[in-house]
Image 1 (spheres, one colour):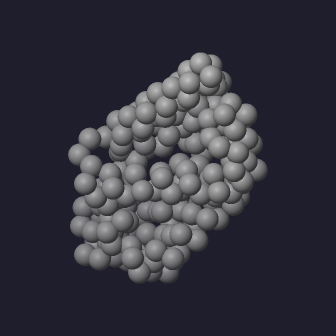
Image 2 (image 1 turned 135 degrees about the vertical axis):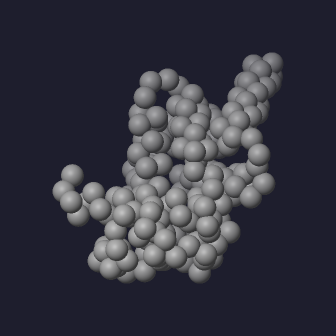
Image 3 (image 1 turned 120 degrees about the vertical axis):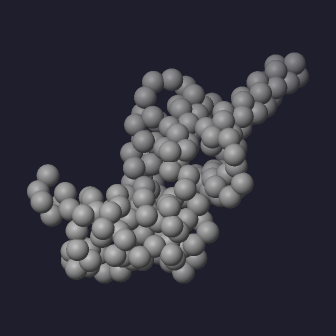
Length: 199
């Protein structure tokens, strides 16, 4: 890793830790610089503002979750098993980062439009992959035969809602909530299959 990239990485790690400990509004660039072992001017060579720092961290988190998700989805197993594995892997990633997630949920209101834009961009870049996976879920009658864009929006809104409520009030690991929800889905799926056989 060249010196510029190494320095940029240190700044992002320091910023994330500082935001998690002090909150986004209270965190000062000079504190981030001290934690990173660089001068304030060095931070501004890499990032335009404190907002830019936060957005970069959020974008890297989205990309990390995408990579985790794709790695789990392309593994072996039935679609529902792979989907559960994917959600558990992303939940584990978020479990290690709850303090930062709380900062984003509570304090990033001013830049939420930019965060939503980043999120939509990552989702759109991976649309062919998500379409293929949604079709696999439909093939096994695990979700209704509705347009893929609507199915994806429903799933993502559910996921965002769960993460949001866990961030604000959850005390147990997010992965526990994921296991519970997939247990309900599997039970419902088994019940539907049983009812279908009996009719």
